Image (cartoon, rainbow, N blue to C red; front, side):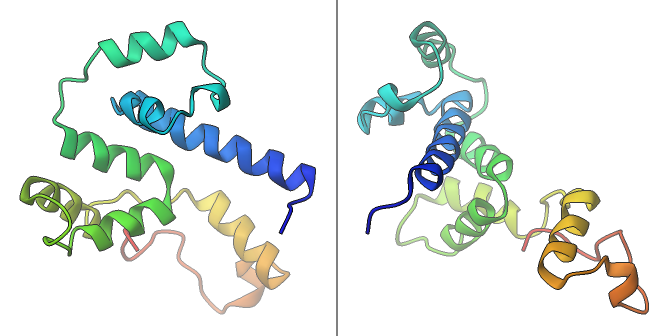
Length: 139
């Protein structure tokens, strides 16, 4: 099915953001491997500089940080991968397992806006009590 141009453009912006996060975290070779450079909003010189400057952190940690930066869907992917030693190496399992219980909570305002958008009213009007401080984060 063909997407409407506006929707396709919105998706392209998210794809650029995703690739940009991975490049920033030292995974620029993925942009090369997947031939994504033409779609990036980054000048080639910046892309080359990020590729040369290998971050001091190991690849498993950089992957976890990238997934955290990309948000809940990617965090969930990392959580799932952390339970699959048949798919990824042990050092990645250990690092991605941190996504099970050490992810910072989402900021309150976007959460509030999402509740209002989906349920039609602010949480204060919908619930007898609603604590802005989450009991837990990571899922």
